[in-house]
Every structure is written in C-alpha cells, then in structure tokens.
Amino acid sequence: MADPKVPEDGAVELGTPNGTASTGTMSTRRLRSEDYNDYSSTDVTPEGSPPDGMNGFAHPESYQRFGETNGTTWYQTLIHLLKGNIGTGLLGLPLAVKNAGILLGPLSLLVMGVVAVHCMGILVKCAHHFCNRFQKQFLDYGGAVMYGLEATPSACLRTHAIWGRRIVGLFLIITQLGFCCVYFVFLADNLKQVVSAANGTTNDCSPNRTVVMTPTMDSRLYMLSILPFVVLLTFIQNLKVLSIFSMLANVAMLGSLVVIYQYIVRDIPDPRNLPLAAAWKTYPLFFGTAIFAFEGIGVVLPLENKMKKPRQFPVILYVGMSIVTILYISLGVLGYLRFGADIQASITLNLPNCWLYQAVKLLFSFGIFFTYAVQFYVPAEIIIPPLVARVSERWGWLVNLLLRMALVCVTCVLAILIPRLDLVISLVGSISSSALALIFPPLLEIATYYSEGMHPLVIAKDIAISLFGFVGFVVGTYEALVELVAPAATVVNATTVLVQ
Image (cartoon, rainbow, N blue to C red; front, side, top):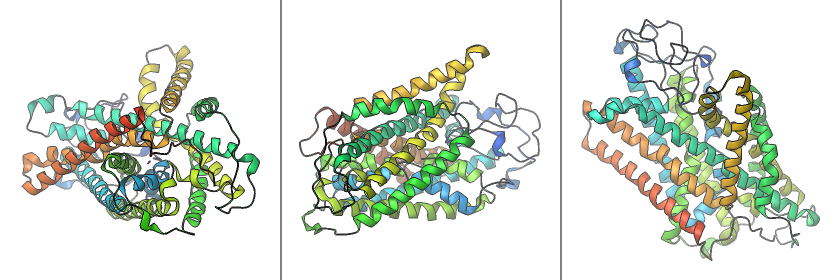
C-alpha cells in the first residue's frame, strides 16, 4: 500500500488563529497552501460556517472551484497520485494473488480497483456538494464526513457530527502508523537476507545457482538495530527537508521496480499447475493485502485542492488509478507465475542473491527507510502538538522529541510482535484501509443525498459496497489474527529465506 506526499486529513479553516472559522465576513483572497494544514487536529463544526459565504460567494449557484495560483499542474498531480498509491503493498501483491488463485486473484484486484476508484469519486463529489452548500473553498475527508452527518435526518447523528472528523482522523493515524510497522518488518527481512547471502554473493544471477546462507541474527534483532537510526530520522520535522529524502526514495524505488519487472518476465514456468482459485480461508488475507495497496483515498482531496486547474482532476483520477490497477495486476500475476508456491511476503525476497539483485533490495530498503519519515509526519502532527501545548515552552522541544521517540518505539514493538510482513500488511489493510477506502465513502453518499432524494438502486449499491468492506474488515482481521496465533503449515514464513 500505500506513500502520500501531502498530509492526509483535516483542514484548519480560514479564520481565527486557532483554526475555527470566524463568524464575520471572510477575506476575499484565495485559500492558499500556507493558510491551512491538512490534519484532523482542528474541530470545526458546520455551525461555524460564515453566514455570508466564503471568498465572496453570496449564493450557492455562484460557487465554483478555484485552483491555487502557484498550484500543481495536471502532470505533477498525476505523479503525486501514483506515488500516493504505490508503496510496499505493491511488493506483497504476488503473495496476495497466491492467496486468491491465479484466476480469481487478478479478477478480484480488478473489481477492487474499480470499487476503490468509485469510492474516491464519491468522496470528491460529496466534498464538492458541501463546498457548494456552505460556500467553502476546500473540504478534507474528515470535514466531508462531518458535514455528511450534519445533513442526515437523524438528530443524534447531527448532534455528534464532529465525531465523523475524529473517527476519520483516528483511522488515518492507525493507517499511517501501520505503514510504519510494515516498513520495520520489510527493512529487517531484506537486510537479513542480504547479510545472510553476503559471503556467497557473486555476479552470477542464474536462478539455478545454489547459495549457502550464512546463519545470522533473528529479524527482530535487525528491527532493534534499525530503531536508533529511524528515531534520529523522525527528529527531522521540516517537511521541505523531508521532501528531498522522499524524492531520493522515489528514484530508488522506481529503479528497483524496473529491475524487478525485467527479471520476473523471463523464464516463466508452466502455469497449469497453479490453482485457479485458492482455498477460501486464505482469501481474507488477499483482501487485506489488496485493500492495503489500494488505500490512497486520503490524498485525493488534498491533491485536488493544490491544483492550478481542479476541473482536470476527475480525468487525472481515472487515468492515474487505471495505471495503478494495471501495475498491481501485472506485478501480482507475473510475480506469482514466476515463483509459484515459493512466492514470499515481498517479491524482493525471491530475487537471486547476486550483486545486481542484492543492490535492488538495498535500494528499495533505502527508499523505504526515508519514506518512514514522510509517513510518520502525518500522525506525529496530529498527536504531538496538542500534547506539547500542555507543557511550558521551555520543555516543549524535549517533550516533542520524547513523544516522537515513543511513537517510533511503539511501531517497532508492534512489528516485533508480528514479525511476518504478510500478516502486518493484511492486518493494517483489513482494520483501517477497508474503513477509509470502502466503508465510509458509500455511507457518506447516503448521508449527503438521502434527504434530497436518492434512487433506490444507488442506495442499494452504496449499502452493498459498505457491507463488502465491513465483511472484509471483520473476516480479514479475524483470519490474520488466527494465522498469527496458529500459522498454517502450508504458509511460508515471511522471514524465511529461500535458497536460490
């Protein structure tokens, strides 16, 4: 799944210093990037909206989407969208296809891709609806859900509408910290394999070459060894500095993907022995991994708001997600065809132990290491500032660093407790990604338009998608936990290194 370039949730309203919208007449200037932060740390209620409209709009019919003067072009937005949906989840898709079957797997990925993109479109549509109604220039995911609850006929939901924003923020925190746990396991597994094969590494990349693996320490000790460096990395709090590391990470991972593709398309064995559909018990693990990979819905609204011409965004969304879906299906199918039943939790672990592919593993690990800081930035900016505000300014910097260290240690401990990459990905996907990508958007559409009249088929469609996401949430989480407690004998442990 997934690496956003922009913070994912929440938007401080243009108005008073604490972010709460002023009740007076608003300035007519455009809302720029520096006017808000995309976090869920600010509680804004619909009642706080300016009665005279925002940015000079007096009536809903006069509403239109303005882009930023110095906003991103369609090409830059497309690149950010691709990056926001392509991460470590991509490398786990070959194992996901194995858990579903060589026929059922790609078909399911296609269906999930279509549904995920449809839910992204729903979120954009509902956000525009409330921007029109309340004369706002921008709404984030949490804000759209909050206004959706405010629009429902239920008095109870309207009264507690603010919890819509808070719940979305909570799931975003879980998702982002879950990504960080995945990164710890990924780094440990790949570094362990590189070290184990170091003595036998040569320039011969033949898959038939046998390498005697040198015994090395447990992968969990690798996680502890990496921990101090990750802590120091997260002490960098300047987003502009982090963007430099993020760019280097993108280049490293792109180069690694090109080399991986050129390897797996060669010498594909006879696929007739692979099952068309796997056992039903492993399908929930496929669901968790697949939805983990597709969960990029949090970056959709911030990306649109940062564009020079936001009206181009729908085309960019469908083109970008079509590319992502094709990439997911191709790597998942080709990876499973190439390695068959021996496929591991990350396809990098199946690469030959020669210098070229050892460099690929190190390059991807390099990219993931620096991406950790970018992913960590979002939950840190939601959790830490309110806590630092409770202490004196003299001790604020120290409390800030200690809290960052504590959060990193929590992700490391969770990774140590679940040292299997496939299970960590499946758990994060089932628990949080399914809620953000599949459950909330259809319910938001019903809440938004029900009082205005909706076709029964649209309501049935939204309920079906939410139920699908909820069933995947429950069953996927259950199966991942069962597999964690009593792993099946047929599943290859993610930390086991195959001899090439």
